[in-house]
Length: 314
Image (cartoon, rainbow, N blue to C red):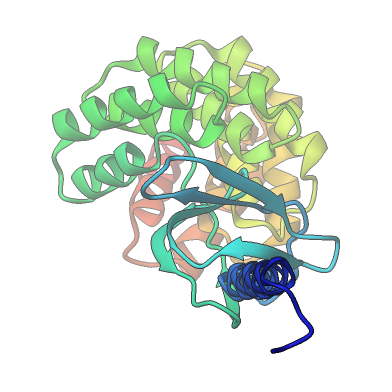
């Protein structure tokens, strides 16, 4: 008989059983490790520039738990130890359109993504686009409705106020246009274009002192008359000074316009009117004749001809 007793046999069996359990436990742990996955990749903008601080949110579809991590200063992200399950994921950064989708991770594999984020449309952008389309189609009422809606969503955007003002001007709502242009100029005080547009609105409302202030302020910001808007503003300012009876200032502005564009019929006509008003008939006739010679067949030439005939009667 074997030297081992029954008791020894039982104990040996118990040891074997315990070893089997240990082996099974080890297999279970290894299996659990194999259930884990890795997600890695980059976040960039449309131009390929790395984006730091992009939030990546993974939500367990079945259990609802979430894991959140971010891209680093180079736009890279890396997360290991993820369960090989299905997730809803959200890639998000302020100022960019979020990316939403579903993702199923595979055990033991690295999943790589290269997320390219697109700039988000600013508030009111959709309404603004509708307003522009309506304005260009000649639908002033539709443009006003759309721009008013855009202003409610983006009250700090000066361009929205300007476009609403232009729509108001089209339906001769001058006072409403002035309000919007004043808001635009206050929001962007260093933008000469807004001041020029405000000056034009004041002219339409026959508020000449305010028009002069707006134009002069705009021309201080943009004094070069090679800029088309500054050139037109200078001509209009000359006309406003003329209407206000300030002939010396009108001559100065028309003269500046003519120096910038020696072929400007409007500048020559303006100077002719100023000198006629000042009683300097010879100078007036000289400028009117220049208009007739350099711009025949134009409205300016017709007006100059009328002035020449009137002056020669005296």
